[in-house]
Length: 370
Length: 221
Image (cartoon, rainbow over all chains, first blue to last red):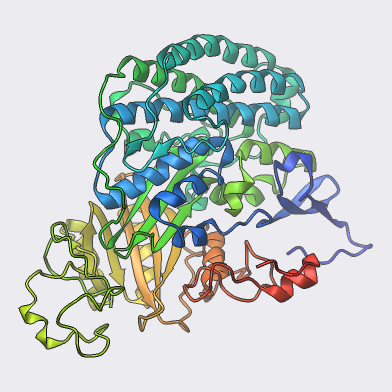
């Protein structure tokens, strides 16, 4: 906690949030300021704590599946994939190939949707109003595909343990191809608005720098780590769901500042399109559900499985005691761990940059607080 | 009782999962509740009981050997389950081992710190550290069993990321880390009573007094 403020000192304690439009949810930051300069930031979190891990212990494995969507609710599909993979791991089963491909398509589509929401709101925080309308316009197309596939737009519950519940709808492949064709020029459009925009560049360059060593020290993953020059992506490092079959790159940058994180995410959206195009071409007929009984009852044991969610490493540590309910489910949320680095990133910077740094971390408070 | 590894016996086959929840069905159970002390008469029971412990196999690698050599009898177990390696250590060796792995074996990323509550066990908590090495592209879990009153050493001095992760463990399980720079609750309000992820904390339970004082409502549960 920052020390008490005295009128004769130059230090000022400024409370930001929890109800503040640029904190992207109910995040409260207690800033210690010296004029415009930030001396430290203390995050107060937990406003959205719903006890997801406790709920898990009181539900069966299948019943808990929809709950995970409510953590990172802008990337619900990724959450669901991570959980399904973790339970499949302790069950020692694998989803059939067709299910894996559909999973990859939807997860990448969700990565794009998540990045779009990040880009729109981040730009809005910095003062660029237009991108948010553009981004939400394209995000809508992605959400429509989710809706057509499983009936839900946000908390999709798209996957089931062992594979998929729903077969793809007629015209799914066409929708994906159309989306890919439509979307790439849109990314150019966003970049035209921002990438060389002088205000954008000067607001982002050298702001909130986090070096590669600091990232590792803080356990920061995802685009933040890659913007610092570490070419590490779980889809490549420890492939799951058949990611090893797709040809794609891991975009990285060197400076680790807010601008680099912006460019990394922009390129990631292009790479996601690339993966989706390959995946949809390889989509062959086949079963969509693996050999999983009606009652899911893994043997006594435990496993930790993690995936590359849009925000970083999302891990599930599942402990089973031989019952139909998990004995313990621990979620390793990327947003929670990444947010811890906020203090380091804003310290020494200007108070106006705090907003930029919160935006660039791309946190979702539902996942921070669980 | 969930810790000693049964050396062998794949869990796969036998369907009659004789879980502790269904003692009356079993024929040879006249002697009260056969929960922890297994009656010797169980010998004639034909189907071999599925292991009540994790069917882990020993972890055989250079690193495991190195660790054992270095830490000797403070390493309780080095095992593999479902292709995932883990090391069980005595509580006082956990942080030294994490430091050793960071400095000598490139495990430079502390992925997660968490705990599991086993209220019936003498050492009540599993404290679990998950480590990853970028250079080796490898994960390892460090586990240690803690008694309820034991205060494990903090790992913040080795990995900064342990700060919030350990605070969450404290918040949810009440495990206090010695030497932690900021041992406060993180998700729950600071005045909250109780540790929700302990098994004896019911899912409907809450700190009624806190709720009433701060939110001005009576609990509807």
